Image (tube, rainbow, N blue to C red):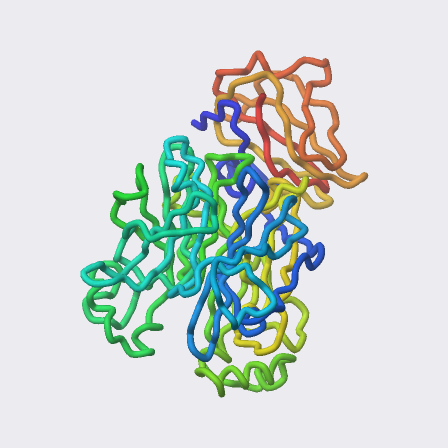
Length: 483
């Protein structure tokens, strides 16, 4: 029995849907490219950048990113700013002196090991001088341990090292953390099925990670681990997140955050990693063939054969996840700069623009010397990452048994002129509970209140075990909520 209370629930998976009684089908939706909002075209940005992380605070938005020198491996942390999350500028900060970044003065940390993830801590008990937290790997001075460290800041510009979070993992990714209203969660990179003796599953022997060969370091499958904390200092043992689909492929990033319209649900937009084993005729003919060859010549075979895409996943407990295995974002129609290692990296964080807006960085880290990196804005409707839908045939969605609070049912839906949705109420066994049927619903909105044809509401069913049956044709249902 699902206790909905008055929470918004999504039609992204079968949590709400009794699939044995339903004939509608589930669909992943893809976002739409809106525009280029910024160009990274100064200094080391023309070499490589990575680890984009957008933070909303009480003054607007900050986006942190790491420009780096692919020849020396030097990496910094820089920031751009926006009032609305769409129009971005480089602030003149004068915090770090870095001649390589001539023409811009927005560097806040001169040397990182990898890019840092930054978030604004909304925990009401968080000290003011720790409201901004950054996590990442550092070069600790002995006897400090290597691992994933926390840095803190009162203003998002001036950071100082604070404490070690964990040494168990391999953190060469944009590792993330957030406060979910009751606890902290941290998601980070590790490997499993490795060829490292004593480290097959990744986290049991961090001391084994010293002096690895390139083959050992990249052996196994990249995965995502999670740990939890009440104070951001004492953490649970990391666990590998689990998926229901039984598939096992490499996740390069995780991009996990709380979905604000339904804070009990987490969403993630991980970048997948696929490494082709050999150069074939396809690589010879692909539009970016020259770029791939150059990457192999300058760096390593993997740099020219690896490609990426981005998927959508979600969870209600943070450990067990549902995901769509078809791509949410792919490289798109071929050009001379895409279908390379570094495509399809989402910037962390969503912008509320009336839709869900977020950023994808193209050709970010394939060592494209002299190439500006466009910050591409994409949009998708609220709650619209996936849906249940009907085609030109009338189909039904029957919910699992549920109880709710409130009197009015609101839905997020779309239909064609040919299409429609009706709703009626069943008992917990799936039999009609009454002869009430809703009025015909058509249109396209994120919030439509449903009433019955006689004008009555759902109040007589509140607190009782029921099912809702939606009958639909050429329509999509994204979410529902009782108020």
